[in-house]
Length: 501
Ligand code: MN
Image (cartoon, rainbow, N blue to C red; front, side):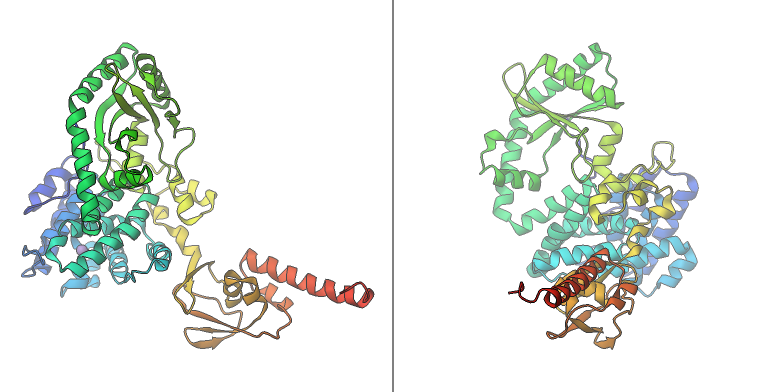
């Protein structure tokens, strides 16, 4: 009765296993493309082995397999098959472009770039790296492939030396999973966390797994019974339900909840929960009514994430009720669209429906938080070309000499950079070095620049000329306010010298 979505392949895969999945949502041309990509990758990686001792092609094939299970655009599936070719084989990005065109080769260029980012393990770099990811990921599709790549690598970590295992696992947990979460891809977030978890906290992993397994065994019978009754009651009320199923809480997420609740298992009611998927919004509330009519709800446990979605866009109604035999069950009620959004998030925009047509891009609320983007840009996104997170293109990410990232608008200058660090750094700014070269203060900065601000303690304040070239609102207001106070205090001391002091 428990539904699991993506199954990470174990064992040897064949191209036909992938094709079988694609047949459910792709046409012949698309399947041909994927076959060609496979043949190309297979010959490029010929003779190479994974650390686990299997032929290398198994890795890109598994990554493609993970994406195909989510019914992702076959163009992305093809790119997943080719994702390690330029980095690890004789064949180049140009070869790929010649064979498969610019769109696929651009995605692979993006992955190759991301692959070069090194995790430095120190907490304060995490936010920086996350921002770097955003800057590098000019095309969100690249992240989808990267997630699938990483999920498969995590599932084969045993082939690596201990130190590398730890690095890959903590990088996945601390960087990739939060990004997947912000993109609203619950499915990937859960896999990234649950696959990393045993390597980072083996003892806790075993404990949590035991708690969950126990709950599943104990509750299985009455949950199945509850599902049956729920379906009957929904039918009696003429509510068009699409599915009623059980879902297990993901292990790492359960671990975090257990920590918050001092390991009081009895207070956690969603170790296994029941999901009701309905056709439309009105049916969500109608179904909630049916549940509450039949079983009495636990006080303070009704949550309307439809009226008030979670920051990553998650929408559902949650309620916890006492079922007939006094047992406690949590229900999660949502529409099909909400369900898809919560599992796939941004990936839903490259998800194909049964007829093989791409679903229209809906509003992208989840991304608001992600990059604090202008709402207009987000809601006006119409097609795939615009979907390629172009919105990152008008932001740049420059570094302090210590490696902290400063997030600025395009064409921002060293003066904007200085004010972003601190208003005093701005006010005392006397010069700037970009990548170790002295530059003028109006030089436009680029992503990746390392900027060192030269300050002069004796400097009186900003120059009014700076207002002509600064790009950030912050710098403008600080410069203006500093100029006006400087003028004000000068005036004051001139007019009323005795009042000062
Ligand atoms: Mn790879």
